[in-house]
Length: 306
Ligand SMILES: Cc1ncc(COP(=O)(O)O)c(C=O)c1O
Image 1 (cartoon, helix red, strand yellow):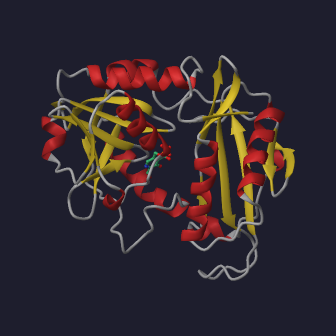
Image 2: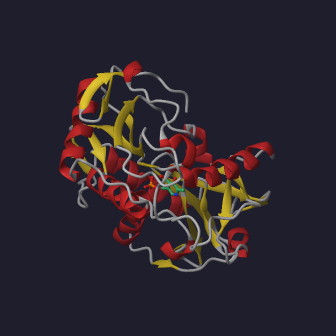
């Protein structure tokens, strides 16, 4: 994601110029991964700019803070207001939104002591990781040699910065071998998720996805897909998924704020289904994107106007 600077960043309660939102090199989070973040998008809808899953993303930010013992000085509604204000001030009609809370400058032991907990909210234009062709034709992925963290190690449910070394290595290995991304298994060897996406498989007419207990980040998009599937009368099951099912599914897709709904056409060079976007994936994509553009009734209240 190549950054295109915007005008301002919300930093500890104030809107400051983009280039002034800086920290000291001895900031605790830079050394120990003691930060949490969110990835949110605002879409241009026919009714104006709207943030997707604002309440849920802010709630997950608080949950992540709790899981790594960061105490924020702002409430959920203050942060939601700050996000909307930043999008407005930067004049975006569509953008990526990156709130980041972290243990700041002060003590430099592993224990953060009473370091200040800082919060920044950046917004910037962004077209997404994946091209329109990938969204239409699907991508090639591999199963990663690197697993997701075991449940008694890092808190997989927290979107904390330290966890993303795992994601970074998964995607780097995949790219090195010519794949768009990698699918990680969990510590028991069942399918977990992509480097920054949850995964769904269409198997015998049912839509399967790994449960939260498979060391996944419980994605907001995953939740939306489960709602869309219900609306479309597609049965869904959260269950342990053996790796073999990736190869024998009729359809596979990844989902997330960045990936949106991204078809997978092969895993480990083995063709999935017809080797192209499957009809169920396409149906889900259509419903998902039409809601985001404000063309369909937002019956599950995904969108918040800025
Ligand atoms: C590891 C990981 N899994 C899944 C997701 C998908 O989550 P969401 O749909 O909330 O963006 C993300 C993206 O935030 C992620 O980083």
